[in-house]
Length: 269
Image 1 (cartoon, rainbow, N blue to C red):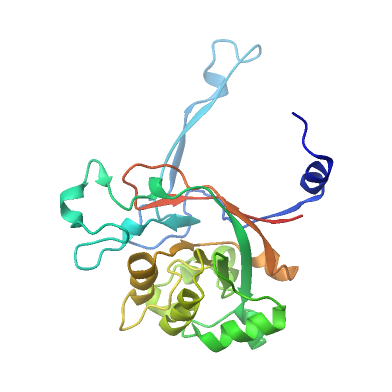
Image 2: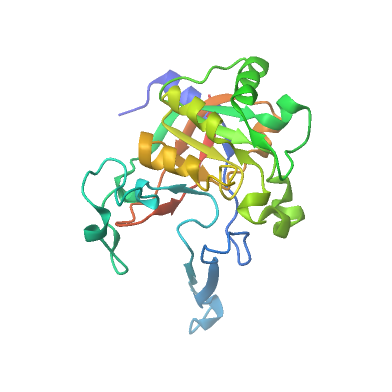
């Protein structure tokens, strides 16, 4: 069955922004996250007669929270329980099979309205500093400057500009979580009040981690049911001042997984 003409036209004219980072050996990661490793297990030159026909194959391994990824609800437990499941977590986890409730395979494909809140633009800087915290005032100012409004069911992406350091100074990008910028707890509560569906940022930890360690992760993943995406590439959408778009991301169906790598995109039709 042929696509309707207007749908086909929208697809062919759509502009797609890739919101993910590349995976490569040495990709920046938190020290608690396994690295990305890669090798060829079959090279073209291994074929009996590579001049006629050959194939190559690769093997890679990585942590679920390496690179651009989305957290599952089972990533954070509070009082021995994860979001959406009243039973205690401990009887549902093992090192061999993972955490079998609230796992990433329960997360469906994501197709929703996306909003970018560009905090450096609001503050008149290129990127936030290591001690900076995104606040509700920042979010309200971004709504006004960008002429958008965060609404129920949205995917809200928060740019700190920290991705500036991804290639230029990976060690600085990958600094300890208490010395990189992020979303503060009051700003997270502001988003939760608006009943957004998902949120993400361009840092390794999303939130500004301080004495209330991982309070934002606990709020979103354990209390209100909002999944978090991290290490997102938001520089191009910010450069082009694209603040509202169709957001698409497809988590892998990893049974028992606490996260999944994703390749999210912002689509302008």
